[in-house]
Amino acid sequence: MAVPPADNSAMDGYAVCSRDVPAVLSVSQRIPAGSVPLPLEPGTAARIFTGAEMPEGADAVVLQEATEETDQGIRLPAVQAGQHIRRRGNDIQPEDQLVAPGQYLRPQDIGLLASVGVDRIAVFCPLTVAIMTTGDELRDPGSGDLQPGQIFNSNRFSLGAQIRALGMTVVDLDNVPDDPAQIGSMLERAAKEADCIVTAGGVSVGEEDHVRSQIEARGDLALWKLAIKPGKPLAFGSVQGTPIFGLPGNPVSAWITFALVAKPWLLKRQGAALRPAFRFSVRAAFTIERAGSREEFLRVSLTGQGETMCANALTNQSSGVLSGLSEADAVAVIPAGATVSQGDYVEVIPLSALLDAGAA
Image (cartoon, rainbow, N blue to C red; front, side, top):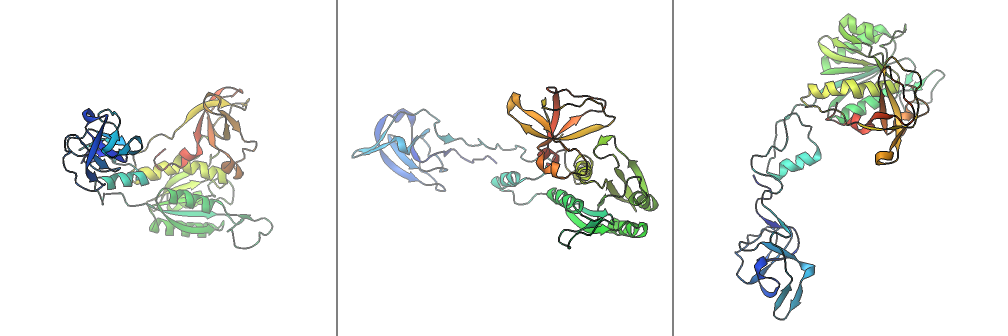
């Protein structure tokens, strides 16, 4: 259908035939929004309100504040044909595609569908994603004071928030101690309850890293290790047929690898048509003198605007420093084997783009 379905007034004022003004005209009818107007009587004006349908014979609207009441009628200035009119179909034309297959439905998309009378639409069911962290040292926030050797568990809550932001359902399997039998048992439970499993920790090469071996014992491992920094020890495979992402335990590595690798896979699995994450070039306010062997995602803050915008590398780039993710505006993408001099252009991806439910 056309939206708006008929020409309507964009302002409160008077509907006129532009050939009849400037002049003092009598008011022949009053047209509030939602009413059906009569044809405009020649040589008259119609009082009209924002959103009201234009009467036949009128081709312009004179703003209310531009008029003057007199004993003979309303004094109206000259006006051009088409002024202050929203034309039929100005927003939407019949047969326009409003929402493409695979598009993530945002609030504005739902409003757009409602504007053409659509109250139901076929969508993909939300994926159910099981999350599990591992580590004897981890304690939940709110569970009491930390004992020596303990830290609070951030990955469980960060990953849960990232997954829920994608419109997916989270099965929170809590934290599992560094015990192979308990980890294996929890992986089997997750495989039965979820469409995908996301773990954090236990996929590196340490003697207490048991997630990787338990995946292999109950399924297969298709990928282990990525040439990126942070985030090298990432695993992907399946447990009893259910796909699983084994993310690194360091909180920044877990956040980055989820955003770069797991999130696009989950969205694609849920039917999304993905687009590349928005990135742009700015000047570097930092130097990298030694080329690395992995592609690096450097946490940066952005200062300045337009051509003067600069990326400032945060001082501590440790994969265990989660505060940097909250402080950063973006990540600068440094290719493997590249060095950077101050003033060079580098590509940055805003952190908001890494969280975008339609971007990969």
